[in-house]
Image (cartoon, rainbow, N blue to C red; front, side, top):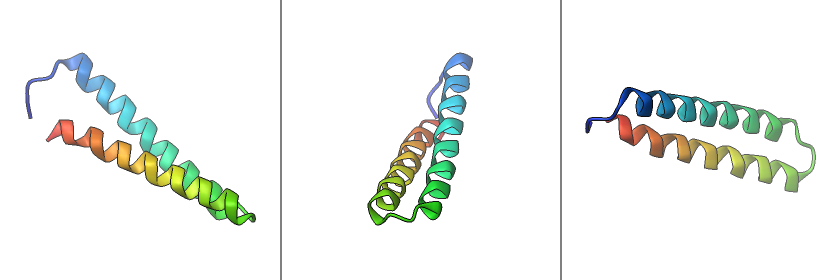
Length: 61
């Protein structure tokens, strides 16, 4: 891991946490959706949030 400031680390943690929350919520909304188009939208949104979280996690390695 390259040297990052304490503020940058806090910001990363905040963003990662937000994407994790979004991922969980979108999955929950997808499972509750009855319309297939709506379900697909929430599923894709959940996947996008997970990918964004994983990209940010790379900065911590």
